[in-house]
Length: 223
Image (cartoon, rainbow, N blue to C red):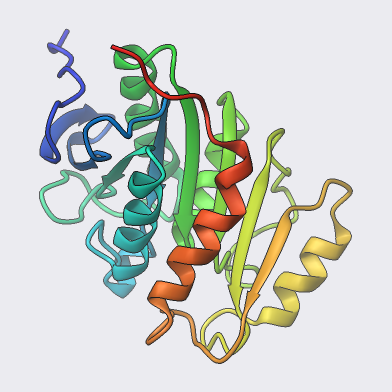
């Protein structure tokens, strides 16, 4: 049994043992004294298309959450960066996410678990949420039409979807139609005048995330 790394006291990288080997992780902590009792695990876009934990949408999401007092945990899926293994079309990537959330729940057992993802990562996060006590879900440009969403169940928690209206990769109309078909609907924020990667609108994305989750923030962390 590998020693489980403690939750870090400073922002920066660490490695976890995942189902396919080492997983590269980056933790973004709130400012001292601003911490809330919550950790968000964030999933990056499609690895074959160059998605990594350094993706600007993912790092901006981490920034928005850490500014609200939520520790953000980004990680590279198998075969990306320093993470071992090879791309597994989503199946193994869900297992990677579960390995990271398992670590978070062991080292921060009393914290609220939040999940978020961008594009492919939002699909992985929604699949993983079925097995996790998620308190807030954030889906950015979910790839409806590119991944199988017919079996995706709405998470049993507050859920924010941010969709760029001029998305050049995911068809926004398919996303809106999928949301309309759901019995339990998320809060949908339509971001005008920007494409899939939110070029020139990253600060607006930051604001949309902060406004969309603020009412569900966990209490301040003590000690």
